Length: 541
Image (tube, rainbow, N blue to C red; front, side, top):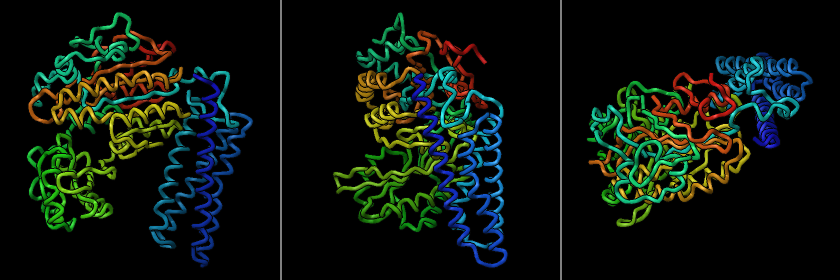
């Protein structure tokens, strides 16, 4: 790990947090000026002005503390004043001194700052490996030993399973094998993945096991009850679902559709069946333009998708009716995501725009992403990752609509000065080739990823670790268009990581999240870490 880079990253995060506290203080000043000039209003204004503007200067003093004890003391003051401000905001709300809409955003920011400083104070008091900045710099003497890996990148090859799980038959997926069947379809040119250990996971036609793999390798079971995008990704972050999100291969119940039509105030709907997004606008787009009825459809995932031409149903209106659908789809019909799918064009040449918007079920707060960000670490999400977690814990969201863009954004993120997690999803494997049962397209996409691997590896630094996996299977040779219940491949590579370690068959994708958490001296409620197997500096936990 580059110590200078670590110091700069630590100082940047401290600068950003201080700026955030200053902005919060400015907002408090403006809020206090809005309070009525009655005796009660003046009293409350003075109290919240004092407590709400205090955290910023106290945090500035903490950064310049002369001792660790002084540093902790100043953090306690920051948290104390933030907690007091929270009480005054509740008093203002309860006594109706200001309208609720004026309090909503600042109350949320106050709560978020309280969470950040609660975690920071706990870390500082416990002497955790996540030593907070003092005097705007890290402890240089020991910086290189803080974490086994300074940054971990997790790339999900969406739908790229590596063989049926033992219970695949219960899901109608016996014999499914995404990687295996694609490799059998024709010789694949995957020299980089082979070198990392892909062929060591299990026999694959044309992908021989490497005698000296550059990475470590294994495969992960999906322990949750499901085989969809949300289930797989949530499990990676430590969330095990006992009940699968509902799917609707035969369309949504009439009661749901009727309620949607009434509450969204639309003239009816078109569709209501499982379909490819590009195919359904080709088939129903012209009728939609004529009638103004939104197109409702689903897929193998737990999704309620609403397609509409932007010149027929404007974006803001589409987003509004999507929010209505999200509010309807609760309880037994709580799908993983409601997705607004706008499109443009003329009959015969309709095309989807980039104005898609997802309305996800918020994941339980106890998962990897908030855990990292609340401890001052970066969580950079690429492609659809942020939407899968409803942006919980995300510190940066980089837009990417396809594999090419996701790879570009991953390289960009690796070149940035960050510390924590880079989380990227390559959606084309699943969306374009798995569901459409395009074996050759899938094969070419795997070769494309392999060809771009050298660029990704070049962008990695000495203290980086790379984990490549999948969220479920989507065998393009299998009957139907659904996902398949398969193991996920596991490839782990780092310039300073151990090589050639057989990580075996992992019980759960949550082992990945637990490994990332342990690397940063944290822990999740599910999963068994394999950090000790891949890092020379860790002897177990």
